[in-house]
Image (spheres, rainbow, N blue to C red):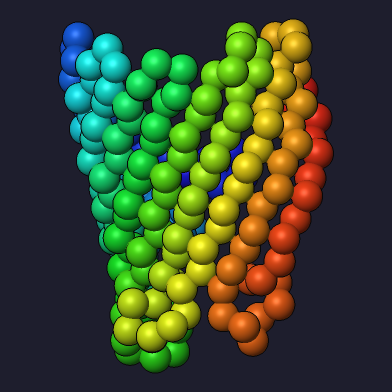
Length: 185
């Protein structure tokens, strides 16, 4: 559910000093009409001063196929470096003409170093196994990104990104250098 795929539904949540929980029931982005399915999503997070950890899950029931996903995530602040990590399990069935299901596993680890106020160095490592039943099809991505925020709502980013995947797919095996300007309105 995002700005490009809006949805109708209801959400309930509880916010306490250390506990944050949300659950929602919607039509589901894959369900165009009434009575064609639903999506249930939940999130539970425990927050402390220097760390947080949570679990989230979602299930979509639709005529096109069902999709279930769950994730574990955590964040830890160690001085000027903040660590983020997430691991997910996604299982979908019925989205193709074959009766089989597909299970994928994305993971993510990031270190954000606040060099000085408004200047951040971000190191990330991501893995993606698009189909657990197929051997040797995993993908990885390494990134080094420098972010500068000279004034509120403006950010300059520059970095390098290395994608590694199966040799037969050139787009999965490339090194990128990039520079970006972000303006938040």
